[in-house]
Image (cartoon, rainbow, N blue to C red):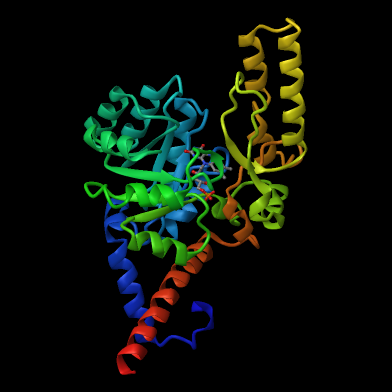
Amino acid sequence: MASMLADPTREENAAARAELDRLWMRGTEFLGCRVAIMGGAMSWVSERHLVAAISNAGGFGVIACGSMYPDALAAEIAATQAMTDRPFGVNLITMHPALDDLIRVCLEASVGHIVLAGGIPPGGAVRAVKDGGARLVAFTPALVLAKRLVRSGADALVIEGSEAGGHIGPVSLNVLAQEILPHIRDVPVFVAGGLGRGEAILAYLEMGASGAQLGTRFAAASESIAHPRFKQAFIRAAARDALPSVQLDERFPVIPVRGLANDGTKRFLAHQADVIRRFQSGELSREAAQLEIEHFWAGALRRAVIDGDVEQGSVMAGQSVGMVTAEQRTADILEELVSQATTALIARRRLAVGLAIA
Ligand SMILES: Cc1cc2nc3c(=O)[nH]c(=O)nc-3n(C[C@H](O)[C@H](O)[C@H](O)COP(=O)(O)O)c2cc1C
């Protein structure tokens, strides 16, 4: 076990760190930082304080634009730039009605990396980002789409497994990594979803990833503005508490979102049952019923993150929440992840040397 190692020597630490830096060099060069770990954008959570803290500590912070409009985003970028001179990115949701203006705001503020999330980015948005001189990062849920995104100009990809917090696809990172990493060599690929320790990040780097993206662990960082009750809920929760939202009826799709089970998730089931009953009795049209279901969670993430209503709000969290055991400084989280990876490398090197001597 890596944690049972006798204290590593300075030389062992330096060699292991050099090895880690070699493994994620493509990621650090692409992002322009020392540690190829991105703070995954989290609506309401990934604002100036957390983003600047991650970038200042050597990682790569990403502002979550969420439903912000251009003026608010411009102010958030300026405030973040005032708190760090290191690079950071901005995550935009592709279905935002003001997407083109949001891209323009990023470019005018010289944001170097724009992450387009929430679906395959429209061609116009891809061109606008590239023509403006920024690097485009896109999410891919499958190999075919990964190839198409690279052909259409994505400079890096994120593969996010269903272990992640927030909106999720159906496939785990374990499987996505095996399907995609061996076949995408033209651009760096970052892995996300359920990552809480450095050994796991190391394993994906060795499979060909260039870096990782973590959300849940950073949400509970001391620099995160999330309400103390939101952070406490993370600290108390186990992996099994972070569940995808449940859809009751296939006629009324529910976008899967992973979060902590609470009164709100129970009420959501009862709400769906009631809406379906009203649809069946003719009281609601199909469209009206679908809208009633979709509106249930409106504003619910803000209620949990900012107001601290962790019983009725949406407490989005990944399965990695079980590895959040305390409120930690962002720099300490990054340092811990790096040290877990290098300790694993040292253990392996000692084993190899031991075997060679034997
Ligand atoms: C509270 C919360 C809010 C999130 N909001 C967004 C978002 O607005 N846009 C996005 O692309 N991803 C969002 N995510 C996903 C994260 O960026 C990241 O990919 C994910 O958290 C990685 O998995 P992990 O939580 O297991 O580390 C959110 C995740 C959480 C936990």
